[in-house]
Length: 431
Image (cartoon, rainbow, N blue to C red; front, side, top):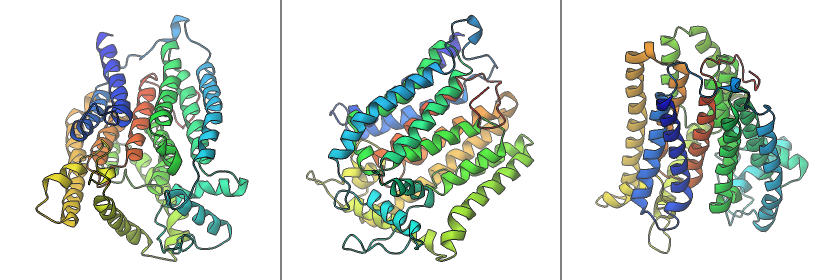
C-alpha cells in the first residue's frame, strides 16, 4: 500500500511539473531555457518510468467496496458542467482573436482544404488564396473533422474544443466506473485543470492550432492500449498515423510485445485495420492523385524548420527554439561552427537515433522481464517514455506539441487508476 501511494505521488508530481514547465516556470523567468527544457523532459521521463513499475502486483488502485464511492456519472457530470461553463469565456476568447494567415496559417490552410473537399475539389492543390503560394501539408485527420465547422458555419476552433471535451468526459466516466471516490473526482479534476492551465497561461494554443484534437486522438490511443480489442487499436492507430506520424517509430515495439505475448491474431487484425484506415483516409483519396504527396509534405517540414531556426525575435533568437521546451536550442547555440542547415540535420539524426534507441532498450528490458510485467502497463508506459524522447529532440519544439504529451500523462494516470485486472474487450466506458 505504501509503495503504491508513493508511486501515485510521483506520477502526480510529474504531471504537475509538466504543467509548471510548460506554462509558468520559464515564462515567469524562474528557470532558464536549458533548465526548464531539461526539467520538462525529466518530468515526462519520470512519469513514464514510474508508470512501468505501477500496479504489477495486481492490487486495486482504489477500493470501491468501502461504500464511499460516488455514482459513476457524478464526476463526468461535473466535468461536463465545467466545460459548458468554460464555453462562455472560450467564446469570448475566440471572438476577440480573429483568424487570418497574417497571424497564423494553420487554421486558414485547414479552412481552404475543407472548402475544397466539400466542393469536390482536390484539397492538396497549392494554396494561392493568401496572396502567395503555399503547400497544404497537413495529414487528413488533422483537418478533415473541421469540415463540420464549414457545414455549421461556426468558428473552426470549436471543433477541437468539442472533440477534446467529449473525449475527456468519456475517459472520466470510464475511470469513475472502477475507482473509489478520490479518483472519481481526481480524474475529472486533472483533465479540467490541465485544460484550464493552457487557457490561462498559454492561450495561443487555442488561438492558432487544432492541437486539442490531436490530444484527444492520443488520449483515446492510450485507452486502446489498455484493451484487447484489435479493431479499436487498429482504428485509432490509423487515425493517429493520418493526423501526425509521431508514434510511427514506437509501433515496432508494440508489435514485438504482442508477438512475445502470443497475440498474433490481435497484431494481424490491428495491422490490417490501421492499414485500412490509412488507405481509406489518405492513400486512395489523395495519394493516388499525387504519389509524392507524403514525401513532399515531409520535405516541406525541413523548410519550415529552417524558417523557424532563422526567424529571430527581438533578442536575436529563434522564438520557438527558446520557449522553454525541447533540446533544439542546444544544437542551435553549441554547434555554431557549422551552418544552420547542418545543425538541423545533426539534430534530426540525433532525434531518429534517440527515438529508435529508447525503443530498442525498452524492448530488450521487456524481453528480460516479461514474465513479471503486465504487458498493457508496459505498452502504455513505454509509449510515454518514447513520446518524451521524441518531443525532446524534435527539430522545432513547439509548445503546443509538448502540451499533447501532458494530456497523454493525464490519460495514462486515469487508466492506471482502474482495476489492473479490468481488461475491456472494447473501448467501452462501462466495466
